[in-house]
Image (cartoon, rainbow, N blue to C red):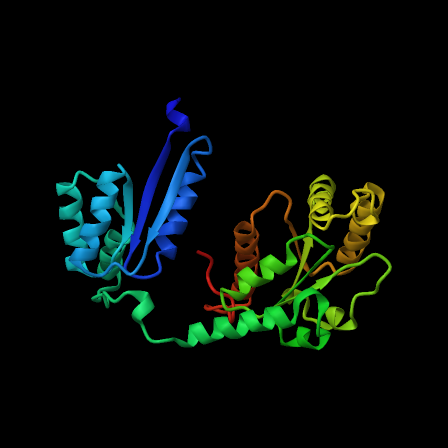
Amino acid sequence: MTKASLSRSIFVVSDSTGETAEKVVRAALLQFPDHRVRVRLFTRVRDRDAVLEVLRKARDQNAMVVFTLVAPELRENFHELAMSHGVEAVDVIGALIHKVAAFVEADPLNVPTVTMPLSEEYFRRVEAIEFAVKSDDGKEPRNLRKADLVLTGVSRTSKTPLATYLAGRGLKVANVPLVLGVEPPAELYEMPADRVVALTIGLDQLLEIRKQRLRQLGMPDDANYGLRDHVRAELDHANDIFRKNRDWLVVDVTNRAIEETATIILEAFKDREEKRGLSQPPNVPASR
């Protein structure tokens, strides 16, 4: 068995949900596609006994540990215990909290985020997700005027997952499909141009995505939905609409992850708002 084929483990330990550390670990693992690494999550680790239990398992499985603990005493205990158990441990938030505290000249709360009271931002995100569900795939065109952003494009250009992702950032996002031979709702053209995002994609990738979708549905590959000439006509139709609405933001999603596309959109809208002289763009959270 080669070294590259060995299966290893990374334990993600958090006093909250572990979402932050897990994302960091998975992003790092993308740089090692030939290595099999199991990521195991340990959440709500908030005392010495819980830390000991995790570290003993890590030692027994020869696992690496990545942790996010905000309580200073627990972080110090974790470092000491990890060293005594011979476990490789990485603190992804402790040093950052210390640096931020020095930068803003304030003491951190040192409270796990999951135990904090529900904030206005939390309720805004819940409302935004509900809005995205109600406004998905062209439903309720009347909702468009209430949207922070409207996504439009042909089928399978990631409109729904992108709307859901942006909703998780607190934005009310509707999406409108562009269908060959079907006029988009008038409300789309009534939107302020700087709140519309036009999604486009390369023909070959769209064909492959649609063929996979047809197979999932148990339908033949030669359905119009997956035919090259028909798909090309759909893209031409969409691009025609985009050219007539030059102020829409056009984003090519070819070979892009949802997170990357979302970042492009958020940064573009931040730039537009800043050019208007606004120090804090409304309703557009900073990308992370």
